[in-house]
Image 1 (cartoon, rainbow, N blue to C red):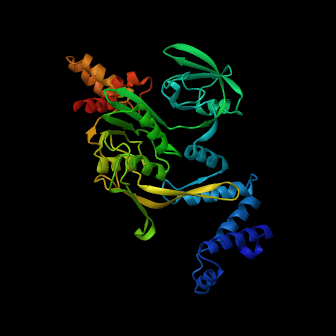
Image 2: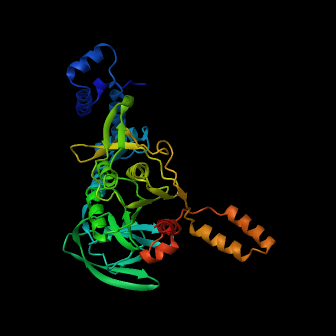
Image 3: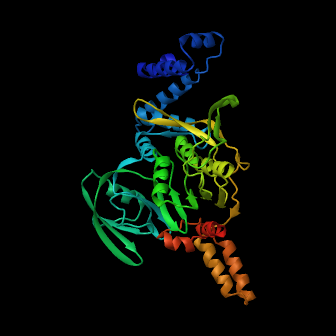
Length: 427
């Protein structure tokens, strides 16, 4: 069997190996450090020989032609795969989507959709967007430009387009179809919606923490002008920018540690404390969390509980206490790499998620139907036994978000209803 060595590789692959080694050497602080390491027999990049040889064999012998870029992207993706679940490779299109989520600028009509059991459903409408006041959360997407759409990818592709161009959107609400012509616009995605609840309270729904989230929340609270308290809803909020989470806490807390980050070898990288001036420090706070509340959401919920006396309502949060940093390459691909761990002063922080002060489950439609049936069959032991057997054999479905107007959600959403009851318990 012939042994393949680096010296026998084509010039392009040898060049790839040299460039890769040079780049890695630069990360270690320059050529001098690299020469010292190699002289000591400790060259950490010698395994790149193996990578270059594997790349050569795939390109030369694999049954189908594969581009060098696809192979390199696959290798980086595999590298991220041996790290933690939150370190990821982003190709250029993934990076674009990531930047939209953090910077909040894009062209569209301003709706967010999910594939739910009832179909393709609007789960959020951006305040002030072309869709605002026309489309509502809970609407089903039926067609775009008279072409039926049944999944998220098809609908997203159909809605893409340049600013100032129009599209026809058909939705279904309460069994009735509605068609409207909307003009695409350049949108700054406002992920905060603050609504007056009356009786001195308001609710702030934060979809994610992106650029301007803290200032948008501040402006929303000033506009709603609650005199007693604020319900902050970060359910299904997977996190976002650390600075924005810190800014949100700083609107309410006047002293204490908001968050500290520690990197490799337990070195403290950042520490952020509350400032003495908090414009909304007098408001009572209730924070809604669930199993999808992660990272920045957990910093906000836990720090507001520890520093501002907030009460947490819902179910245990996700438990993501790590910091990711984005490294962008020349070809606009990138890696999102875990570089630190968060610390907050809440006693439930670290490891598992935050435990709420008031646990309120949000049952799935399956569980809700089962509960109703059990009440109906309360005096029929044989039927109850049969129902329990069927339930045990039926896969459980994840609870779906409660959509629709806020006035309905205050009574139909058990977690929000519990928070509202708690808000009204005290003067």
